[in-house]
Amino acid sequence: MKTIQRSKMSTINQSEFILSNNKIFNVMGERDANKRKIILGNSTFINELNEIKYNWAYELYHTMAFTNFWVPEEISMLDDKKMFNELTEYEKRAYKLVLSFLIVLDSYQVNMLKEFARKITAPEIIMALTAQEFQEALHSKSYQYILESVVPTKDIDKVYNLWREDQVLLERNAVIAELYNNFIDNPTLENFVKALIGNYLLESLYFYSGFTFFYNLGAQSKMINTMQQIKYINRDELTHVTLFKNLINELRKEYKDLFTPELTKWIVEYTKFAAEKEIEWAHYITKEQITGLNNYVLRKYIEYIANLRLTYLGFEPIYEVGENPLKHLEKLATISNSKTDFFQSKPQNYQGRNTLKW
Image (cartoon, rainbow, N blue to C red; front, side, top):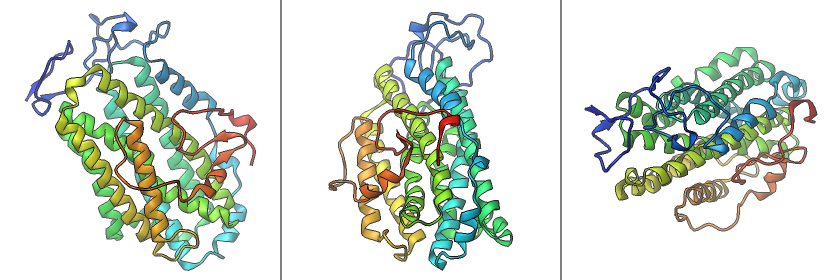
């Protein structure tokens, strides 16, 4: 394979050329912010923030790094520890499966965001990815805190090991990791875009069955403090979705030739594939035994979310579905007056950690 030069990109074979890692310091780099590119740019890789090209990235960096900071241990889990014993066996099973899956997802992100940052050539976007990486690690800490505070000690290690023992969960994890591993093994331009789409769908679709399960419990006055932890994680994920939505849309503007008819067709088809896998997973974790979350409702909800994700990228919806069938849970996904669901295209009204109430 050949390595593409960091210069003006002409029509190229996306499967032939690969993206090289950034230098730490590029002496011959361009300081003019207006000449920055998401990829293939000629950056110095010095964070000169007196001029910014991608303002949305810098604003998201500031929101993730400072405005949305929170500490899992500030939420007491004592009530949930007592409540856990009162859950049905199906609710306990789903609780453990969802946490196990979320642990895997955020572990992927901590590692994969580094890979994206090594290829992106705009300093302000790299800073935003770094802030997101910190948040993903914080989410992992939150899941640890939930497990150690709520789940019986004898079951904690089993939850961490579920991905080895549960074949459905193992397959689910493997499907998600495939795009990431393909890019790491073969960092072509095409695989880069596919990995971006995989990240976007992980953040904006794959979390949904899990988050919905916890909000549904909260609607029944169960595991309220676990839901509170999820609210903060959910709020963080909104900024991550926005970051990658903007990144993909900006990349489409800068490098139109990169998004061939074949690749754009793949994006739509993969979104449908991802949605169907999420539906299968949702049905598996609930087993039609969780009050308020039957198979039909879960399918329509995930189809609804998949349609939204496509429209955010400028594509037409692929499912025939009306309004959000779980709209009644939206009000639970709030912290004070700030929206924490994924139905907003940009963050709004976030509050600092010292003013958050529960």
